[in-house]
Image (cartoon, rainbow, N blue to C red; front, top):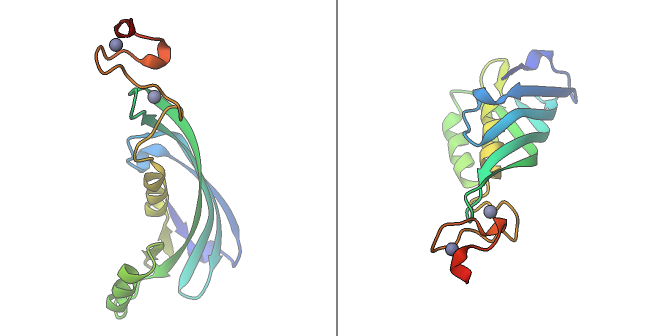
Length: 152
Ligand SMILES: [Zn+2]
Ligand SMILES: [Zn+2]
């Protein structure tokens, strides 16, 4: 998804939605809805807002796939790429600000931002419910659906 910054005035509110298949995230379900406020400055564009999406995640305990709704806040700066100062900026980037992206010309590609936001939201050890009972280590039955025969 590209945004032509020539069409943006300062503080312009832009609502965008686009489809999952462009993002290449396996866990993603349905549509990603982005609500962004773009603020244009001289050589940078600030993008603030939120990204709503659904993830199909596998519970780390019972291995059931559950769909969860996420709504992540976004606030970052897109800096215009300039060949002469890029080395300086690269150093700056590694030490301080990770929420910085680059654009070239008049077009800002917001796909990496949306993709990163979704990837960061994927839990490391997801659970279907906080008190998931998991699988029986002996027979492999899902204990959320009832006790297995091993317990007798
Ligand atoms: Zn579970
Ligand atoms: Zn069992």
